[in-house]
Amino acid sequence: MSSTESSSRTADKSPRQQVDRLLVGLRWRRLEEPLGFIKVLQWLFAIFAFGSCGSYSGETGATVRCNNEAKDVSSIIVAFGYPFRLNRVQYEMPLCDEESTSKTMHLMGDFSAPAEFFVTLGIFSFFYTMAALVVYLRFHKLYTENRRFPLVDFCVTVSFTFFWLVAAAAWGKGLTDIKGATRPSSLTAAMSVCHGEEAVCSAGATPSMGLANISVLFGFINFFLWAGNCWFVFKETPWHGQGQEQDQDQGQGPSQESAAEQGAVEKQ
Image 1 (spheres, rainbow, N blue to C red):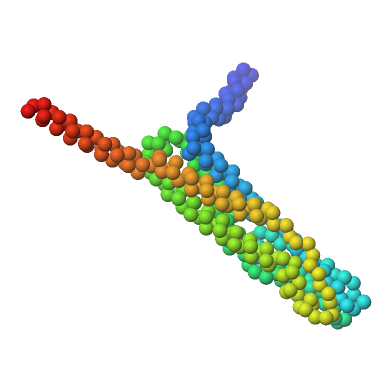
Image 2: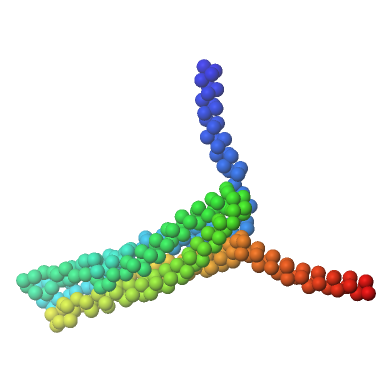
């Protein structure tokens, strides 16, 4: 019994010891530095960006009242959301004819390209910042000793900065077009029954775009975070060290020449 209990205790302790070793090897002070602290902010705001855009859903609508007393007032409610392929969103347009009752209609426009690019960039930023934090905290010696890691980190940071600017601007333009396409007045303008004298159409509730507007704001915040982080990543690259060495060499050159001149004067 004692041998089995001791073996079970050692088996229980081995995973705990491995976890303790991993936690002990983490350099938590790296998070207090700008390089690590900004990476945490990038990780958080990447979640906010693709989460607010990918989870958006809204409703627009209108009411149609036929002049014919036989038909009642028809209310139209159209639900839409990510990825904003509005041309695939269907709704039933009521008809005031006695023979037919309704006709299937679609919203106008396909705005999936900027929305999907924005969400995809947010997901890639989330995974990259998570991997970078693991390297910063666990393999900090490898990051500082190997020159390739800072160079790769700098190139990726510059690329993400450019892509966030493009994604935020494109998604902001796409959101403006979505607001115009889902406006109740646009819905009534697209229905043919509203252009005749046999029906009276009125606009319904305007869709709330607060969450979508916040996603655009998070996109530009991510751009500024990645742009500001370029300098701190550049300081870790050998390019920054070469510039400092050249400045030191230039500063030491005139001093050596002046010392030689003073020595020659003293000899004379």
